[in-house]
Image 1: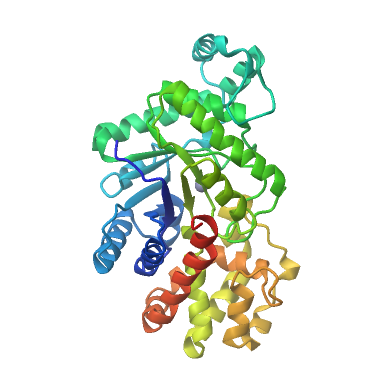
Image 2: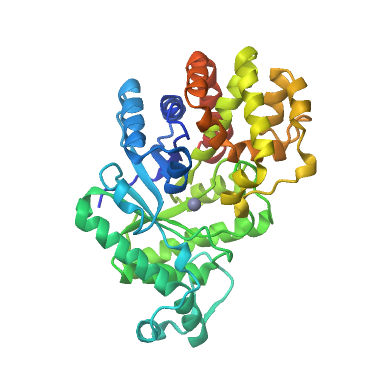
Length: 416
Ligand SMILES: [Zn+2]
């Protein structure tokens, strides 16, 4: 397998134009003494909405790396792929996020469930994991429950992993297993046995994305119980360290946090946990980069601001269509949205500060922000009009992108 470094971050952007600005933020972090490896990611869902393809992500990454003379590794992630979509990504990706959420909760064949229960029957009783004080009790019912919930999903991940390994060669890529897009969070025992299943399938996972407690809505802060999150996040790290030794998984296996941008309230807990336990972290952030483009356009004023207003007007009128694919990961109160006519009256700074995610700023409006976040389809439809506005204000926009990634994300999560 190709090896992933301790710290890595998922970057990228809808229109493939901010790669260099994002990499600049990582170069700045490196100068501050913290090496974080960039992983460009873009999901099949995103590609299909804006009609791009994975080759463009590879080109963007290569171009940014060449432009900045980046010497450390970098990767391109086929994000949330399944057997149905993986082929498109094979030539361009060296990082594969195997998404098996669709199979969780669907039971595997009875015979394989029975095999699993038999194999782990010797774990029945008290499980003590170094660092976790509370008792974790395993019964036969625990084994049956986890097997019914997750075994089929991990078997599917195994099929997908072996398919990629056969096409690309096992030594040429990094594997992540993601289960974040499910309804139920996974507790420490779930994670422990999911990792056992991953080892049984021979998947050399280096990152795992469980579903954490609380809501990870797109582009806005975490919503949930902070103390509970912190406790579970620490437990997950300890479970992983233990499972790596018990099941012989890759030594660098680490947590991956999806929808990781803008989760400002949990960043301090995440940072503390990774340094306390000497653990790694992968943080996926790509989706909100395009909002920095909009902020840049709005604050540039003139015809660029007009484009930003036009995008909002269109998004406002196409609310259901745009929000549909993201229904479970957004939370927009329609009565909190300004009308397009109101927004037309705004100057560039008003638009930018309604959109820019600064909690407590009197103008910040998370509903406005979330709607625009899913409104990238409108910008995509503007085509050349949108792209040439980005080019005309390139330096100004790049600075928004760099600063957002470095100051509001990397410094808060990774830099001690
Ligand atoms: Zn995800």
